[in-house]
Image (cartoon, rainbow, N blue to C red; front, side, top):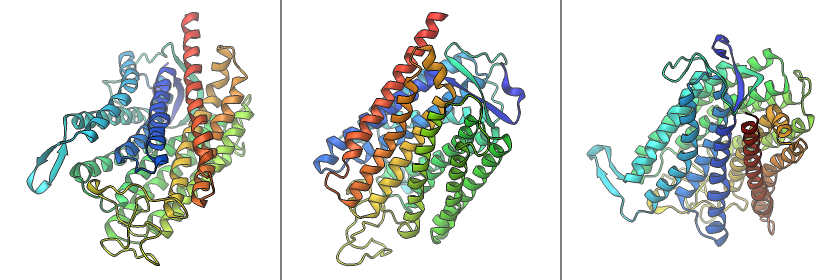
Length: 485
């Protein structure tokens, strides 16, 4: 089983242990760290520590990178030892990363390394471990993406390329160019992240211009979308030429967004230069949503209930995504402005002056770590809209990948464990969790009494339930396969 001969498309499978590791990562990143932030700080009116918010965001998005790896590893013809190292490494890396990050930021006196003109860096032994974890993780994940794109890396591959016991094949294929764009833009996002780390974070300086954060996050998120859209289209049975068009459109759109962000940052133009191509990326999402309805073809035997759940949450995600361009056009109009943090009065550079006394909308510069003010209040402020854009949209990406996996592999896995009807329960709850998240975000922005309740009391429990149920299902399937063997 060597798919290397197919030079234009990459076949999709599922490495179940690696998928379980992504679920465990999400369990740590979302319910554990996220709820520590909510109930340990936010509900008590305290500022959530900056490093805890970073951990929460990083691990949740890294889990999606692991999901993508779990879908491509079966048909990459990797050496068995390499597969095992990737799987066990994914299980171990996330908890180690959390422990090291917590140790670094709770140390009373981290070592200050002065490098003259380069600056003074707050370093520690746990911090060195953090860098090793981050660089090692992305080196491996980008290498897997390049292999899926057709790039040869001889040390990792084996010509035999047999499926392991806990891997499943599928007829779904997507263009290799999707993985080429995914690997390229993910690499740029990681490089920008390390630049932010060394130039600003480790020196306890405010990130300037603030739009560097947008360059880092949006390229990373868009890179994931370059795989998500063609994958969903192929899963429902869209025509190959439409999938190829989506792949080409996605790579072009993200490249134009990248160029637009560079112009915005370095030439200090209006935000429209990157918002416009960013809207083209939203069109790519719309194109994928349109195809899920079956307008470009529908494969036989598809589970229409799961497909309906996919349509539902994808529809909602389009609305969450459109909040981003609105924020960029109305508030983040200069590369050194952000709506994320508390602000008082005008900014130091005088870029933004709010009406009335003080900065009511909390639009201003990025804060330094020495004087972290906490995030801005959400009531009737751009920060409330940013929450609606970031959190439900992120949850929706996760839900879409899980539903795609259910659509391709769900019926076979659930029949094997004797619970075929469980697919209906999973489809409903997976699609509902991000939706209740958005209801809570809207309620908080409108300042309705108990407004965030749907997020805290419905969205979070559903998300946690989804993760635990999927882990249990996959473990039961592995036990069945072992018994049959």
